[in-house]
Length: 81
Image (cartoon, rainbow, N blue to C red; front, side):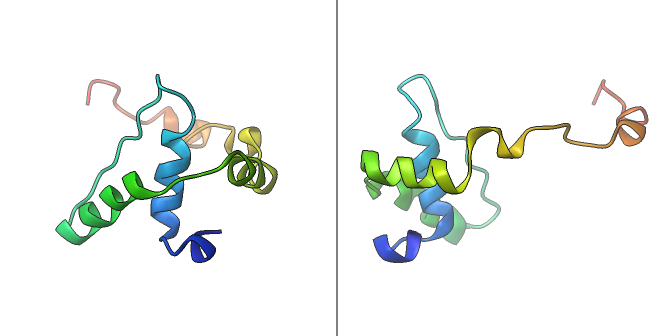
């Protein structure tokens, strides 16, 4: 879909997050200026309801569910930092 729209996958992903509602704000971290410029390009991406439905079919909302780290590793994390 990104290729069809002439945008990067990152831009498509950021645009998808932004399309989730007025109360949702995509948080973008960029270590380089070119990546920031790329991310800001997502502001120009328009996703139709058909686009959003296609993304939901390809990656259902519960597809990325689960813990960030395995339980054994989580036990060693220092929550103060």
